[in-house]
Image (cartoon, rainbow, N blue to C red; front, side, top):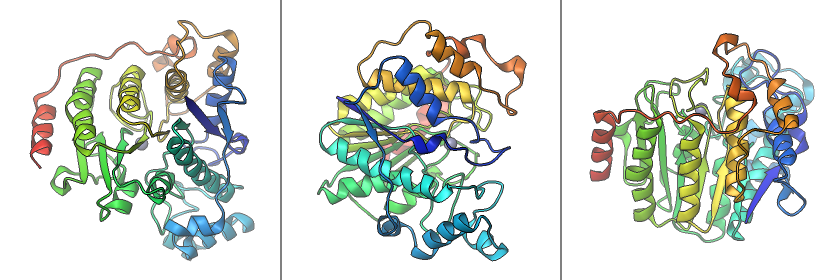
Length: 364
Ligand SMILES: [Zn+2]
């Protein structure tokens, strides 16, 4: 079975105005899943909030304290801003930021516990993969994938695979487990894109990075899935997989230049569901409100074994129709973004450089 971990805390406004994450993301995914009849008391779990001692297990105590008191005070000094990188345009200080970030950690811990119990655990507000132990980074205050993995390690698992198919390098998670042989990290991300890490020359058998060129299409992603992700699963034989399934690798995401359809991401995650009895599925980036929300709603439907509707019910369409975005011109918005879940396939030529890079990785 599959369980969904969510919280009403995400309905509170966050990130202020003029931030790529200031749209109603989590609540829209949740509400659409309910409208589609895919959530009930049996498969929905309210996310716990991590307490201070849990947060300081990975994050430095002074950083956790600084974020907590800045939130309570409603302001941040120049020194604190510089040291911890919040209260900035990138990682704004907003009312409730601490509880929100701590809930995301609690949710990923719960997701890992559910996965250990044999459920596929879906935690779409997770995926804060850039979070560092001592500062905020890339819209992430804490790092919840790290906590999902730590929870699996606590249970005695010795082979964990972390897969990151967000458009950006999963730098925070990679750094956290670089020296832990029990955890293999695999990140597929757009080359020459922020945070500019995750280059192939740093690869080791336990730390795999595949930077891909702009315009990555479904055929290329399927090739990566079949020739890198799946073989890595077969060689690692993971007892559990944690996947950060950001939706910013999709065509028309304003912060990256990849060109996938949502079906490509779905296929890859469903493949992982076949590869392990213990799967944690997290969200991640996604800055086009329409494509991001549709991707995660559809993903939850499929993980739960549901058939996706051809046309969305009116109430679900209404949620998508309410979105707006300063980052996407009106003429670039496709009509199907408000009526359907599934994108048109984005098939294309598989570029030689992708095959070449995978060959290099497989020889590492
Ligand atoms: Zn991203």
